[in-house]
Image 1 (cartoon, rainbow, N blue to C red):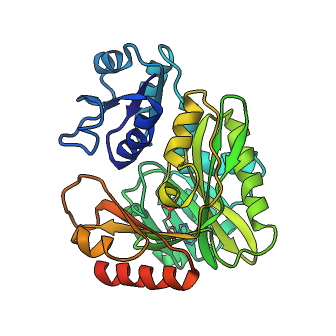
Image 2: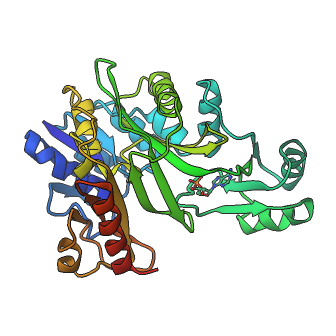
Length: 363
Ligand code: AMP
């Protein structure tokens, strides 16, 4: 089968690396050059909104998916008229708009922090009266990795925060005093069968994921079930086919949904070495109409992102249990250039290896 992927970053690269053994071939639409997918298929080098490029890209494909969630929805719709696109443009559209995302949570019966969409300072003041302080302001569109966010402590700081985010449409939501951040990655196939990976614990620094621990330690009874119920509701709400991630806050032993990603997700990278079937393979199995693979854990795994620079590979690989995944991207401050999955036999060994990798990566 020929799979088309909108976007040519590391997620596209890892999808292709997982799909080649299944006999799948890949074509990417990616405006930038060079790109991490350059060696892994053919690349149509054009803007996402170019209709002629979209037609050239779609020619002969069996299915189209995304690895980048800011692809114009109109482009996904254009493609949908020619070839099956999964997840559908509707899921993409919701994933691009933080207010629509929160409304989808509410619509699907998934708890989330109180919120309001606001389009003016006056509306923001009114929302703040309902929500209270502190509150978190987020740009409604094109925000990721904690960009386009502000925490507002009181009424006097509202206007400056509104301006600092560019006076655009915003999501205002209650600040959640969470114990920790968790996420669940789930998949749904053509036949409606769903599969769930265990809930994982995520550590962010400056809004960027630095570490995922899988499965999440110290899970209180019922938390995994709740996460699976919420993920299933979203999958069914969208008639979704493929992999979806839901970012969650744990607060007082319960879960609040923060965000959804209609694609494979950084907090699922551990599955490459820690689960029987990776999130990348399961996404491809789902969108190609193949049976989903087991999401069982092979062993506790920690994923550490390589941000900005790549350490000497030998120094990583000599640490027991490490698996290195590089994205073929040049170094740049804060940029995700690769990750290390660490999986060992015992918990003591795991902690020792993780500490050694973290020492290599520095503060
Ligand atoms: P997001 O872009 O929504 O994933 O937010 C980036 C990070 O900001 C999250 O990973 C949290 O650490 C933090 N954050 C986002 N929303 C809230 C909130 N309502 N309350 C507290 N912290 C938040």
